[in-house]
Length: 505
Image (tube, rainbow, N blue to C red; front, side, top):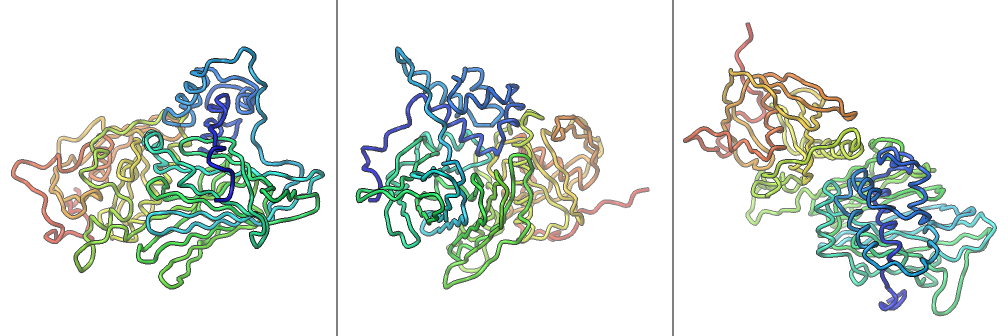
């Protein structure tokens, strides 16, 4: 195996535990130091000192950071781990912050490939480095960071505490040169359950090969992560001046993959890629490619995907509606998540998290709309895509305008109501005849935290009430009258048509 022997893979020094976790979550959330300082109520200089190791984080700082970064308790736990170690008589000097070599290092081309097969992802990173500085470069920092449930940090943290990412399974290997002429050793900077920082060394057992001023060279490294630890997303972050960035995703065609991309930065909200992701087929593989020129510093490009045929029916014929929804990433009835009340957002402190969840919901509606026609409109709540937060969106029939609901609750309902058949993405094989009020008054918040009251009527009221129920752990099955049972979708004759209401006046 290329690299250092297993005995050299020591854990990060205990004084770095909190700093490593803090840096990781700031990077995951895409917040600048200034933005994070505002969210925490601290000065930017103090946040910088803590992150660089020049200031020791207090318990209060750790709690504020955990809340601002929505780290699910990870930062509080890291602080406890760090401070559980008895302090030495004379504290050693703070280690330097693990930043990439400075002084003119440029990435001429950053190319990433992700290959999926048989329950495992293999990432291959190739970078053409140019030393425009005055000093030789002898090492290069890389990061391996995974998040199985990006919208649910508590769930992800628990997963990696119980089953941490190990060096044996990662199988990190690295080379120097366009044709992998020289294997590279490495040293571990930080080793956490779901996050690794590693210095690739421009050296091996045979010699050293620094990158001198004016020279350029390719480096390449690969690592493996199983799909029970890797979520359906792959992010590229621009941390050094970069001329060209490209990404390739390679999936089995029989999984019927669907891929899309989002561009974010530390100062801007998520937005779709400016150029389309290209698709081609080779034998039994579907390959997605995307690239951009001169990406701005601190930009983040995130590709996401779903396998629409991940759940294959054992029988012949088309998949059941519920199987289609499962393949599109919709949590199905029987999952305890659908019965738990969702955690509200603290706004505006958690505005970035709220925007991210809403973006995930938007992406889900786009995937689902390609698989099914919704004549009555549609809605989806965050628990249905595995995120236990109080957010939902509703798409009215015949409209591209979306109703966004953050922390909603019904505060008033009309006495007059009716019964109509409803479908639910979480048990889409049946339809339920559900009584609902014709008018609901909903209190909700906008992203700035301002509270609003919106009145919804008729079909929109039904859609909104259905999604608010989801956020309370209630399903439309719970509203069925005695002796009324769901009917199979095959028996339902209202598919593709709007609900019927008598003419007003």
